[in-house]
Length: 199
Image 1 (tube, rainbow, N blue to C red):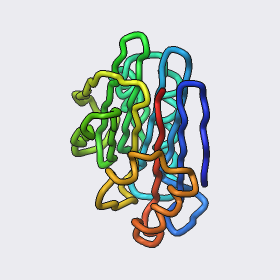
Image 2: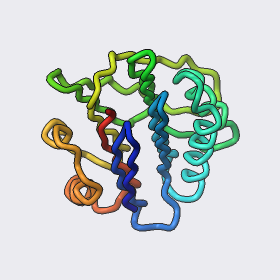
Image 3: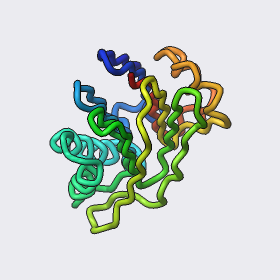
Image 4: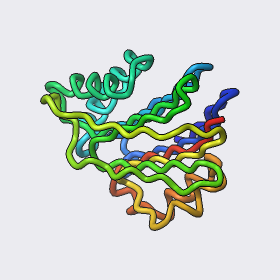
């Protein structure tokens, strides 16, 4: 599945494919842009198939319901949504235009890269584990927002050696498909790639 999301303050391309082209994809994502904030959430349900999809969709539903809240609250809502579910790795990042900052949080093996113009690539290390519904301390990272920042986030179905050469120019949706076909294990896992520019 290829999607393109366009807003006056954001351009986003996304590619998603399920393991072995099955009906259910264990990954789910959500992108929202307003005049006040930009939000991107990626959830990777444990395993694959219907129950992985159920878990990732529950996380996304919780994020949507709390999208106006801060990132810690969104992550805690996603964690609460994992009760009686399989569990999921979840990544959330949000740009606040009023505060001029990017706030990021992740639990699990989801990779996130942020590329401010004329600055070094930012790559917060992921926290091991997954959201399971049990209480856990959520760690957040804060970075200054710079207009025209680019980002690249993907689930563990993609094994790409160097993101730097792809993130400088926002890959088109079809380019993401080409990246996925090159750096995935021939459909042996669900994969989601989201890239874009926040203006």
